[in-house]
Image (tube, rainbow, N blue to C red; front, top):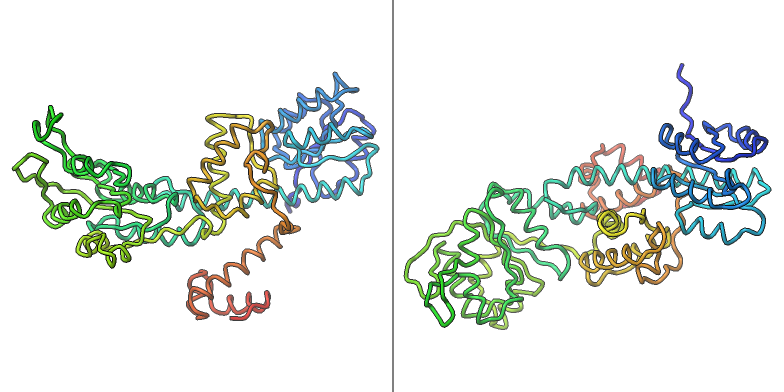
Length: 455
């Protein structure tokens, strides 16, 4: 019969008596021991222990902390997710704080209190297990989300958007994306293009709000040589350039009324005439448009044509704000940090717990664009291995919910949340909720009874 799996704990300590004392104290773990930095690094590579206790006073500098901090840096460079608990001498509070700022999980003081250290070690293992589970789930989300280009999400609200885009991708219907600025409308438009049978063709985007009204027509439809002063050559417009692919008209609500007429004619007949030209040019392209404005109100006010709206809005997809995407702010923050750290500041390995809590609590009025810009700045400005709330220029979150004490508690919390959401989406229809959750009705009844949930 196979022996039960034991999590691996590495003790980096040069005092042989203390080595034996610590090793005997941890029957629940597979305990590994190293006396110096080289031995510790070898064991990190070979055994990948989840938790390390590290004495900062290591040879050849047993009376100082230089070698201890070098060992800490080596461990976190190899395995940033390792929970390192550092040991400091009495009164060495500065070294302890410096170690935590450099990425250590926690610290304890010598002489060692075995019970106190045991509690810190247990919590470190629990946190490591939770983070491993989160990384696994994020990996699954990433694999499931590849059908929509580069979109990173774990939110059910965005999964619904992705399913809609998937269904319409290989049709020729015009898609209108509605959402606030910074929600990623162009990213979703690119995902639509990449998921379609036009993916081999060009994706051409134009921001209708960023181009002066008197130039927008030329940008869209192109012009013939001599059509106006300065037209020294014939230029193809964005519509022609998008032939065989997808044309993305961002901020379509900013197109002036006279140009709306010409745009409507193109969408109806799929032909254009360049400015100054008389030749009808057929263009086969998919139309995807987007706006943060309320087009129906603009129709009532007479500033947007109703017939153009219905041509553009054969399928309407509403993009939720970042604050409405449960869990996405943290997921995206980690994604952006990994990208920007690789490009700009490789010493940065992650977020402090307070920083992640602040990211999760912030309402993100500027949506994904604001989050991306704030993470980029924080990575550049960070002095240590962990981005802090100060780096993010966010307020410390008060009343942070406590971390679940173990993985069972975290899973129960996730189960409760998923069941409540499924019941809400199906208006308390037990069969429908069970189907959404991928379980049987009896199983759902059992879980509701276990968690004391009422429809």
